Image 1 (cartoon, one colour):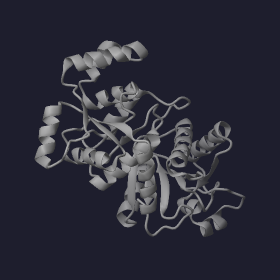
Image 2 (cartoon, rainbow, N blue to C red):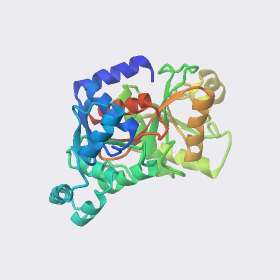
Image 3 (tube, rainbow, N blue to C red):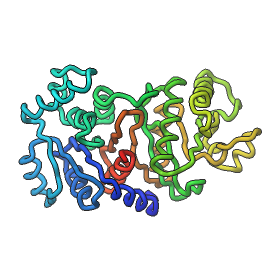
Image 4 (cartoon, one colour):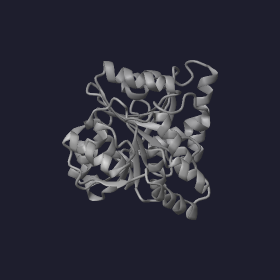
Length: 331
């Protein structure tokens, strides 16, 4: 991540630390991340599982556990109390269902976050994206006005120079295989809100395609155009445009050649919305492999409370970048 931005986000996180549920307490990187959370004073790690087991594992890694907190979901009384607290406030799940689900650590983390015991939850080093998303959908539920969960990645591409320097927001590269116009509209709005809240950018959202402004016709392009119309009706103040090929979205010279109308987005987009998960997933990996870019996230969007999903291959530095972003979002 851009060092200046990373430092700013960390400074912001320190101002209002948050309680972070970490269900993958048997993973080396997560234990080390918990230690860093304490050392950086950005929050309190709440690890799910047996404290004795976690502390013994941490000791074997040379990790200091001072400042760690725990929720032991291996003790039935703890689970029963958690389910009872849930049942007094919420009715989406039965008490028995909460008891059953909370025996799985990622579900337990979501229940704790739902109840406000923790402010946010972070997983994905052991659990798959699908596991994390399902737990979030089932337990946390969606933010009001949204019907779609999505993901946003923050890309730092050293050879790219755009309105935000080397950085771009890209979505959705992790969740929605084939979004319809409603889902694409949700993804665009959520992504704009995320970059504004997290990074302080004025969002300029480009809806990507193999076509630019009608240069081709296909039913899949109609979905993108309908999504743009939906966004403009829901959030008329939002700068969004398309459909654009990638170069028309981010390269001013290409935009001048291909976009023959006034646009607040063409050539200067800072948020790119892929038309489907094939394009998104492939696009992220192309940027990383050939562009030598760092990609942070995915930041999961659309849930009622902030959660994040780690890449299972992410190094500790990237994990910490994600956690810092999560804390800032939870503020």
